View 1 (cartoon, helix red, strand yellow):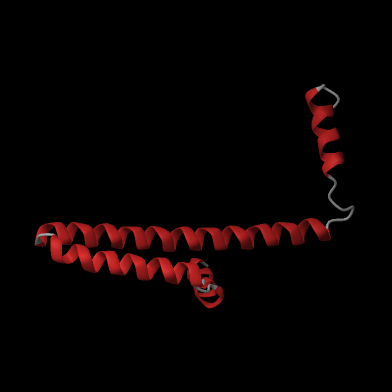
View 2 (tube, rainbow, N blue to C red):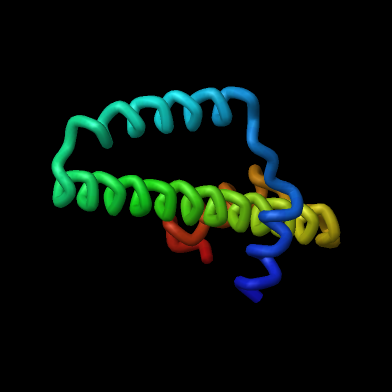
Length: 101
């Protein structure tokens, strides 16, 4: 299932102009830093950037999956008979708290 969701995520995710602009700025700064850092420092910096990319990708996928779960939950609630009622649920919880369960 995760691979299917990952494929859906890749299919429906687009890069906004704002993200593209930020990535260009990051690449510009990285190019400047490469000339100023020693080899071991460059390796650490590139490793940090790779980790940030991985974190961003995983966060985006997690958000996408959460959105699908939310949509599925809404669909299920809309199909319930009788329909879901927030007020009814609150009243039921109040009865349980007051021993009227």
